[in-house]
Structures are given as structure tokens and as C-alpha cells.
Length: 418
Image 1 (tube, rainbow, N blue to C red):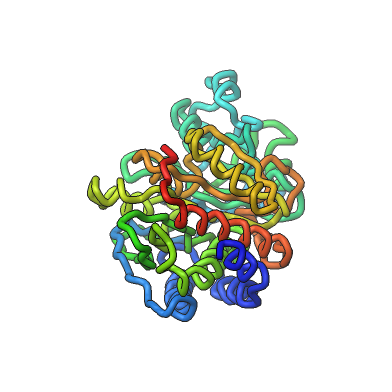
Image 2 (image 1 turned 60 degrees about the vertical axis):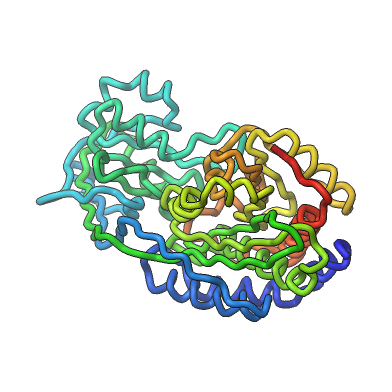
């Protein structure tokens, strides 16, 4: 039966249709019409796939939406204007904007900030974005925190790729602490740093207000009281289609759910579909969900398989959150079904699996292109995160492996992976 499920997903023509339809809704930025359209579409597609409509689970959060963001040279040649994108939840600037010199901190490691601490104070810190999914990646939010700690008054993060435009992402600002922050292109970074410190005016306008959104939860019960949670995040960024991150994961969940739904009476454990939103906002949607469960409800969850950016490379890696039994189980089951699977053990707080793992629930993120710096995954968070980066074979193969893992987890007589 498990091989039949994996085979059905591998041959599922709806997989790419659903992927395209999700991309058609746009970037799905939280609070936007695009996010709402995606939630409505996914609710409909889940009901079509399983015969059951998902339950909307409301999540209250502090909303933030972009208005204008501009960056211009004050004392450079001709007062040049540069394209920029305000980072999510960036504080706004007041009056005539933030006028200050830009200090190039290079990659933006903790040591870089230590070395330039005196120069950073009172200036706008410029750092470089990095390939998102790699062993040595330093997340932008850490760089932002170091910038604030060393007295920077603003923050710019430049794309690490030429000719793709500005990079986006969350800033790491909170209502209590933050400095204006924007993403820029590699070319803008060169222009600002090639001739020493340049004075610029950074202007950011945004609207912040309480909002409510919804996670989508669907239970497909098994014979017993335990659950396997199959999750993916809905929201993305406005620059493109958020195709790799994370229309791929959403489409994968739909195909796995469709293949398993009619067979659930044969499984020991139920399959819970959890489509979270505001993931791009420090994993807020899944945090609300997992934190809101009782101890008993959390203990009934034996595994979280979190699908986030599962195509963009033919190679899939499991981030195993320091659960060694989980790592061994994943490798064994993948090999049994004829798939290769990479593993990365240290816990990474870069997707919704983290909120399960921090509660002691075995959880893994399945991600494509880990440590493959030249894969198309490099375009995540840029205007190039579009559907053409996703090869049909890569998405089908990843979804088939995930179907096998989900079915194996639901079928096992015992599943103790802690």
C-alpha cells in the first residue's frame, strides 16, 4: 500500500496544476489580497483532494504592510536614487528620512561587527545576504541584531547575486526594538561602498495594525489516537511568485493528502494537514498553533514532516533538529524506497518544524538544495523566485519520497523518534 501511495504521487498530474495555481495567486505576503486568495484556493483544493474541508484556525498578530521605500545618495554623484525594498516589520523613518553614512561591514559576521564597532555606531550598516540553506549560513536577523548592538542607526542587506535586483525578508525588528531596514541589489551595494563611506537618505513608510489571519488544519484520522503532522507554509514575499518558497511545499502536501485520504482506515496513526501562515514573520503562525495545544495533544503528535522549498534542486535534505532516532529512521525509510536523502542534524529555526521541535516533538524540515550554492534555491527571497525554477521531475520525486515517509510513519506499529 505504501508503494502504491508513493507511486500515485509520482504520477499525479494534479501536482503541477496545483503548483501553478498557487503561483498564480502571487507572492502571498501576509495580510495581502494574495494571501487571502491563496487561503481560499488551498481550502478548496484540500477539500477536492480529501473530501473534507479544512478548519480555519484564526491567528491574531501585529500586521505590517509596505508603503513607500526610497534610498538616495546625498553627497554622491548627482544624488543618485537606488532601488530598495523595506524589510518586513521595519520601523518607519520620520520627517525627511534617515540621513547617515553607510558603513560596509562585508558579510556581516559577529567578528566583522566587532572589528568595525566604532565605525558602525551612528551609521547605516551594510551587510551581504547569503545562500539561505547551508551549514554555515548566518541569518539576516542575527546581522540585524548585531548592527543594533553596535549602535547602527539603519540596516541595509544586499543581494549576493548580480543582476537579480533587491533581496527581501524579515528584519527582526520588534515593537520595542528596531532600526529602519531595507534590502538592496548587489549593484547598489557596490555603488555605495566603492568610494568609501557614502551619505544616503533612507525613507521607509509602512502601516502597522492588529490583524487576524488563518492557518488551515485538516485531520484525516487513523485507527489510533496518535498523529503525524504534514505541514507547509502559505505566506511568502511580494517580489515574485514565492514559487520555490513555498508553493512547492504546498503542492506536495496536496498530493500526499489526496493519495492517503482514501486509505486512512488502514493506518495506525492519523495524518494532520497543517498549512500555516505568517511563517515569514518569525514562524508566528505555527508558534500560535503548537503553543496552543495541550500537553496531551502535543504528546499525541509523533512526527512533524514540514515541507518548505522542496524543489529547486533534485536533492532533498532533512533538517533533523537534533533528533538522532528521527535521523536514522528517515535515512532507513528513504533508502528502503530507493531514494537518497541528505541530513543536517543541528537544530535550525528557519521554518515551522522548529516550533514542534522546541516542544520536544520529533520534527524535520524537508528542503531542496541544502549546501548547493549554485542551485536555483539561491533565488529564494529575490524577484527570481518564479515557477520556471522548479523542474517537474524534481517536485514529483520529492513529493513521492515525502508520501512514502508520511505513509511509513502513519503505518508503523510503534513510532518513538524522540
